[in-house]
Length: 256
Image (cartoon, rainbow, N blue to C red; front, side, top):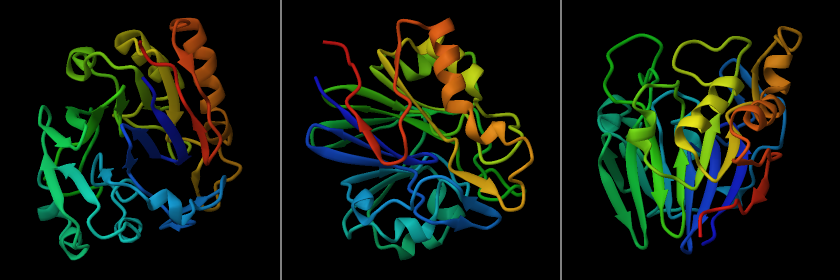
């Protein structure tokens, strides 16, 4: 079994499995509001080449309409239930959209995409009604790949996610402090002890940082990937961890 993962920065990854390209939370800009891309070039147009796009939740750095507008016509979008009501601009993209809730499964050719819960605030804005859940996804084809989106640890994580071969886990953020509903490097390593994947790739760190805050707790920007590698080796040494650079690909180990 083979799967190939490319990390484009932040939570944006391409999962290639069974001849299909699955893109996660595309963010293709140098600047977003008060955030500036400090590492890695803006992903090239080929990064937008996908048959399926997964949106984990409605925050601007995960559901970014200008980035979604770079997708080819007909690209299938899978998003949390309630997303189109909370973000009317999704309709104007003209893309086929399937809304899902935890437990829902969507089949796309030889792939199955299952929505799983995430412990994270899924609102579009920092204040306002909770109209759509935050989700993770398990993509099953030749391998089982878990894209966690943005999440904290939760008691039922292992049961909700199930057995997976590859885990794409957030290990940081875009600011000097992580609030509730997030994984840092140590908590992400603890997630490995629950999920027991064959391989893991740290994401959601070392890409965007607030303008003017370069000197404020810079280690929170630079070090989460390396710290995750260190913590994973201590807590889950049986898991192969691949710390990628922006735009780098890997074919992680999967069960035979």
